[in-house]
Length: 129
Image 1 (cartoon, one colour):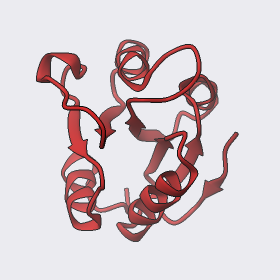
Image 2: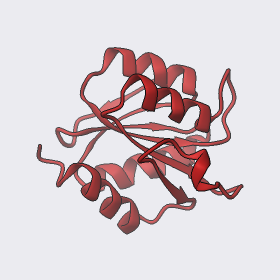
Image 3: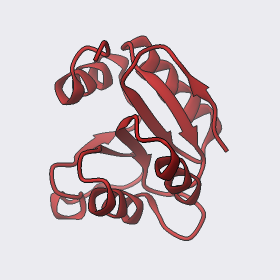
């Protein structure tokens, strides 16, 4: 379900069912100086969030298997953990701003390391918190 990579103290949960995309995103997050945990479904992501109070940011793909897609997952996270920043990603479909949870951010895939790093730093600082 998850691996934890401790490369910083602010933790980012990456949820994407596509293994190589998830690994690329994790590498970009870690390159920016943040720790990561990962899941391949929203259901697994919810289980992780229930046990990991250190998660500061969720990065979730929209299209995933399971009981909910990434937008439903993002909204549930926003309701249950309002302090967690939400980044929704997709390379397959445009997303209207009203579909994203309040204060959420949408990024197109493929993600650039620079764009992701700047977005994370804008949300939670430099990774040394």
